[in-house]
Length: 476
Image (cartoon, rainbow, N blue to C red):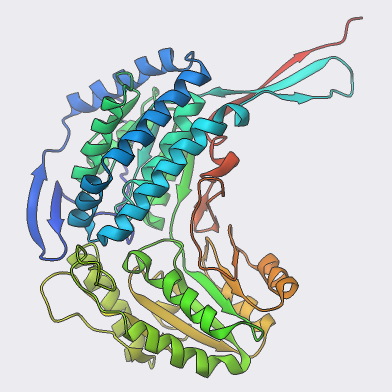
């Protein structure tokens, strides 16, 4: 393996802690199970297998590729209960939400199984000089995926499904705190009849991951994680002339215009902020309320957040679960303390929950200013910041005053006015009159420090393909 890469992806708000692959139940903070990290021989075997699989899989007919994806979706449906419980045990997501994630995964595999061949079809051109020309989308080779813990099946699916249809094998380095899920996904592919080497899980260290990126058998890398992780991966990829896709952090605005239906906006803001205990890159983290709606919105939103009771994520009655780890909980509370020390107001929450585990109260902050960490940094947990602004122009200015540009929400009774505001946001995605979400057929990705490239939809299958021109001149 190449030794030219010396930097390793760093950990950050989206990433698992440094160290061994192990399951630590965040409801108790007890170590449940440990897995050995890969040896260099394991990594070499994985890369050799992926390289060999590429030579075969690139020639497999689209119908056979589609059939594999459908078998994977069917096995996800059969195993949904056991897979959901493992996610809850590893990172604390309520079982009902884990099941929802798995249903989305099934839809992604089926979407690309049903539409991938059409997306990859030749694109005919009309050369001005005559003749015929097409752009053919060829596979490029094995792709490394560096995956996060917060959506441990969904993030894998949105990389794997389109690339398998495109003809690219996958090597996956999952988050160290989700080894059960990582092993379960590999087993699922094996049971679906996936050829040897087509999907490979590696319990790699960060140093090994850097070497994998540099290896000439690897065509590209996709990472979902923090800015630091993305920058480290992009540096190694650039040094080795490799394509990379980066899905990084977000501090998404949720704009409430004067014409908004306030109760609906409050309900959507709570949903957009508190899914997965707020541990989502595209969660609504900065609520920006225009004009006289500010005080009534703060009152209603605070009451709704305060009513959410954290609890056992296996209990359907729990409002939300713990944060993914003790480190994540402490880091979030440090950001809250920094804001409060500089004059921010805690409308509700702001503390640890008095019970074992990594639980943080649902929190609402107001009066947050530019000098505070909570103004610039991503709050990756159950904490929302609410700002009041005088008009829509000020809302856009505040929304864009961020290093991030992942997504956003605009709520307003005037559809054309809401769309006009959406058009002015420096983000990769905007939802109107709805909390942000995800769907197999909608492209996902951001701008600025939120990343590079797109996943899902027809755009997601084009990131790791060679768009090859084939031109035949007109007869002379």
